[in-house]
Length: 150
Image 1 (cartoon, helix red, strand yellow):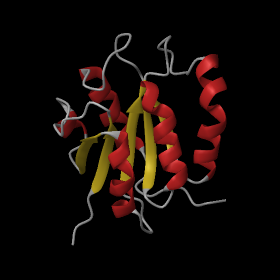
Image 2 (tube, helix red, strand yellow):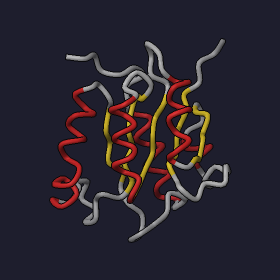
Image 3 (cartoon, one colour):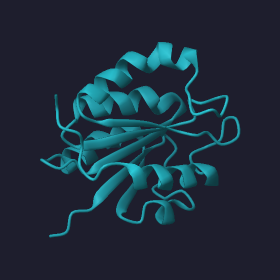
């Protein structure tokens, strides 16, 4: 049986369709665009010695994605966060780190990668084409397996 990674895209308004351009951005993933309350069931299926899920979230779903990674470290390889970089310089704002930095550190200590994707235009949805392009570049450079626990 071939293992396929799952890309879990958290979005409350998900209708089940994959955002445009994402199939090309993540061709080796089964892409599941879902409401956050459906994500735990998907992550339970992905748990194992080789985590098979990457979780994408933006805006209000960032803390949810981080909590999911803490709860399911055996399932989640990475958490990809969209848009916490308001100045476009590759760094999240001080306010963002004040709100989420401790949880990001906790997730990273569990061996899960956390990456900040550059935002699209202010308030851009995950369907913004630049988000798909940033996603592709980030997935390409992530390790195939997660870091060992220290």
